[in-house]
Length: 238
Length: 347
Image (cartoon, rainbow over all chains, first blue to last red; front, side, top):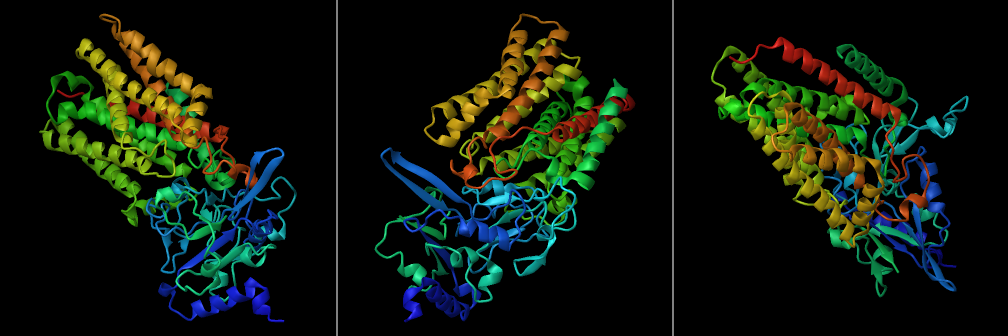
């Protein structure tokens, strides 16, 4: 059996390897989410929360659920909502200390050590894609913090932990970063690999032959709040 | 009075230290879907009041208008102290309060906040020098004009900080600038009414005129939101009407002061009551302005997509937020009373 023909994850891994051979500024990472395939299993949400040990109230990829129509003609639509990694990100300009910026490969990142926690970026994101770390633990009010709440996690190619009260990444803005640390190691973002219905595609939008571009052809596409001119790099197939 | 203010200030300071050292953001009511709450509203109000007071003070210092002479000194002091009180309040709002200084030291001038912060610093320097010149009986015209210009600039930058937010249609309008300006001038005339001993009829007329402008803009804003087909605008209007804070604005910022100031030849105490009522009403309006924008999440389905603290559009300030605000404002009031009593009156 030709595995490449069977599983889009393998194809996307190949595309990723090709993209990584080019300089960072020649890549333009993007995501395509097929709403017709998404079954609302929340595997992506859970995988992301587990990978980054996200504390209470911080989420990078919630799945929004909408009921359409009236009984008996009712359907349920699921919309996973990662950061849109906008080409024209409205969250970047209002940051007073340049703690959030767009990298040359188009990913919008946060420098946790610079972020002052003013939440101007949260207010300016029209997708609600940023959350704030209020310094809470799942085990608040219980006798002891559990290891999973203070253990090391990796974001932006750095190690972080939540052992010291008030130290970054506590008090900071947080957002989905397309698993920058994983893609630079040749791995796909976790939400892509854990998607049970293979509804999420990821790759270099600058490569016309990448799967992320091929799946869009001939399909109806949706771009959230396109009227705002933010030019998101997350596209939905409807 | 001073003892009560001192106790409130100490209580506020204790809560502030507790927030920084022990509780952190764990103890606040705002979160991800309502990122700004009472502290941002209080900061915005105090900044606007600072600009309004600077307007009153500099009508005398910059342009020599005699009608403003008796209130010029207290107005300038209030302008400085309001600003100095606003800054620690917004500092408390930061996830990393001690990094706040980086806005000044390592600013990114693409954002409007650093422009505002630099205007505050320059305004404080110029206004201190102005105070010194006034105490020395020297010519105040140049520093008065500079102080007025910087006050106008920080109101504009504060307004732009809100007005350029495309994510919130309730704010995303150039009308935010005249609204903030009109509020500042109305607050300035409140200061004149409270501390001035000049022409009462002039103060009454000017306060009434500027209050009417602010009220027309505020109520007009609500009507526009109510009639809008944009869900965020409609939600903001609905939440405003359902909120007791809006009714505080309507009672103390519209009905009571307009009734009092519309009287023919009201007494000095009636004008002072109207001015105090206006201060309360416009504080409520500022709170509604800030929090009303978050009445609806960016997607209606978002709050139910994932649950956790701060992932809600429901916001009520916590005891800590209220206590710190009252404490810091009490500290500012205490410093103001002390400074008015200790500084020499102009000759």
